[in-house]
Length: 162
Image (cartoon, rainbow, N blue to C red; front, side, top):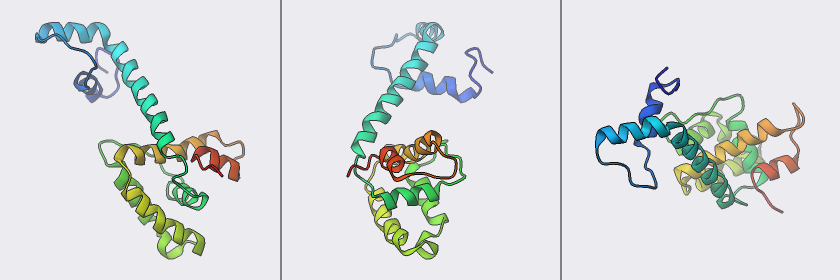
């Protein structure tokens, strides 16, 4: 752990390198003092910004998917852990879809949904793909029943309006 209590040593560097919506002192010593004094606030601002952008991006994705396409994403990320770790969320999404071989082994309704989903994903930004993956985990972590997921829950999580 470093002086700020971060587990990963890169975290401090990432926080310091993250663009701020304000002018920073030009002298390195003054800048370092400012980071020492305000690190917790900077981290909280970063988390708040990420949350707000996540919520705004979810709204952009309203009615993007059909229920069948949402089911394809759910199958693609079943029993997997997701983290970006410098990788492309779009590539992770496309790789998971390819890994489940839905084109060959899914029932007919999901084969067609997989094809249209892939085309939709190709048009999304990296952050939109990240949010789409996270919408899946929001559903999995909020469901009421262990083994059943109801249409209403899928529609709510993936913002599918009727």
